[in-house]
Image 1: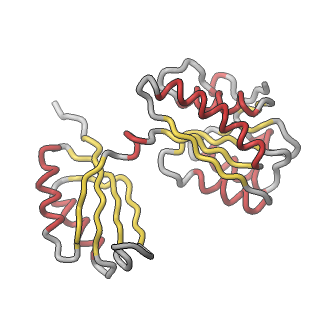
Image 2: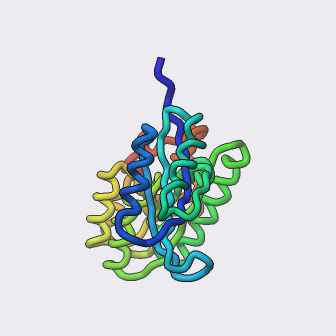
Length: 227
C-alpha cells in the first residue's frame, strides 16, 4: 500500500547567478521529490545582500531521506545555507483575501479575524490578508492576482461601487475555483459574486466559515443569494 507523500519545505541561500536553480532542482529530482511551490528573490540589503533566497515546498514519499537531501544541497558550490521549515500551509493555513475600500475592508477583516480566532484556537489554520485599494484598474489587477496567490481560498470584495473590469476579474477568479463574496454595493460586481452580504462583519464571518474544515456553512448551498 502506497503512503501519502509528506509535504516539506526548505529555504536556500545561494549565489545569484545562472544555473543555480537548475543545480538545485537536479538534486531534488534525484531524491525523488516533487516541487509543488517555489519562490525566489534577491536580497537588496542585509548580510546576504546580492545573494538569492529560494524557498520551496515539495512532496516526498520518503521523509527519512530529508536529511540526505539537505546534505546534498549543501554540497552544491553555489549554495551557502540550507534550512528546513514547516510548509506555509501548516503555519498560516488557508487564506481569506479582502480587497476594497479602507473602511469596508477593516470591518470585513474584523469579522474574519474574530471568526478565524474561534477556529484556530481549536487547531485549524486560517489567515486573513487585506489590501485597501481605489480605482477600477488597480482593483481589477488585484482581483486577478488572487488566483495566483498560494493558499488563497476565498475572496471578499468590500467597497461602495465596483464594476467593469473588476466584474470580469471576479469571473476569472471564480473560474479558478475561488469563491467570491461581495458587500452590497453599487455597480455590477454583486451580480458576479457567489454571495452578497450587507453587513461587512458578517461577510468576514461567512468567508471564514466557508473555508473552515469544521464549520457547517457552505457557500455552494446558498450561491446567488443576498443577506
